[in-house]
Amino acid sequence: MKGIPLEKTNRLIAFLILWICTGALWAESADTSATKTEADDFQRFSALPILGYTEETGIEYGAMLLLFFKPEYTGGRTTTVDFAVIGTAKKQLEVLIVPRYYFYQDRIIGEAGFTYDNWVSHYYGIGNNPDLDDGRTFDRNTFKATNTTLTNLGLPKAWNNFSYGPSLHVEYTDIDFRKYDGTIAEPETDKKLRTGLGYRLAYDTRDNKNWARHGFYAHWNHLFFTDMMGDCEFTRQELDLRGYTFLFWKTSMAVAALWQRTDGNVPFDMLAGPDGKSRFRGVEDRYFRGNQALLLQTELRKVLFWRLAGTIFFEGGKAGDYFSDLRREKWHQSVGFGGELGLNMKESLYARGDISWVDYESIGLTIYIRQAF
Image (cartoon, helix red, strand yellow):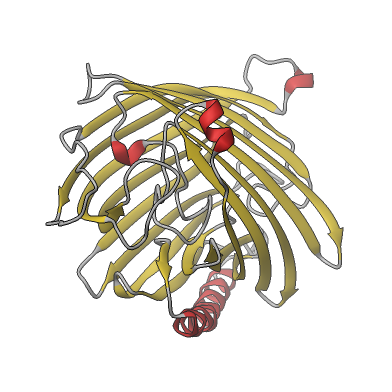
């Protein structure tokens, strides 16, 4: 689940192959048992083991469980709930619950997230030029709840692809920096409670939310964090643009551009930057960070056989304090490939394991549910 730079490619490839093979057997078992008990051949759940290795965590292990609920009507969207539990040999833990729900003839849709995270991370300072050999290590405990609900109620029928709705972010984070003898100053860690409320505007013409073969998606998200209900006051803005097209031989292409901006008394771990899981895979969360960040991605996705699919991708990103600063900064780059395992073929829902070559210097591994974007 965590994207952490690595050095030993052979271990990564071995663990990725093992994860695909064992996961394929488990997913097939879950699918078979579900369909045999359902007269209408509706898959109720899917399960997948997690097995990986990084230099920072040692062996990572855990499991994913996905629950599927029947649509309200024939051809409607399927409500899902994702569960994931990740542990490591160094006693780190991540627990994730993500419901994605559809109500009122799919005119009310939403995604929530509930996360507990006890992990080791690194702080390389603020800016676009991190030095992997000089970082401050910190332990982080986080309880986080998020929710975005969208609807097109009240809009003309010609505007059915548009939607709007509120966004909520509530988080309590406790950060403890370890002893360090370098030159990077320790950032503030007293901004523990972060409570934000805002809105999202979206436009969506994708043919499938899990694996789009054609269509376009865009959203504008704006969150206002207030010290009346937390320990800091700042804003977060995000413009997300994605395009999809079918090419040939069961191959599709996806491209994306993400611009982020933060203003105000922003905690260092919530500045703009890559998440390392979906946006600029294979690095630590906020590997480079600033008041603004720009992330570009392109990816080829191909269905192979049975439940297997593959992907190759190229990603770029950079961070800066202002528009002019962002423009001048150099691009970080990453190329990679991945294997995908179908968890629910009717929903085109896959789990993925990606290996990336970050800045042509370090190797990263990311295991996650659903496509990167």
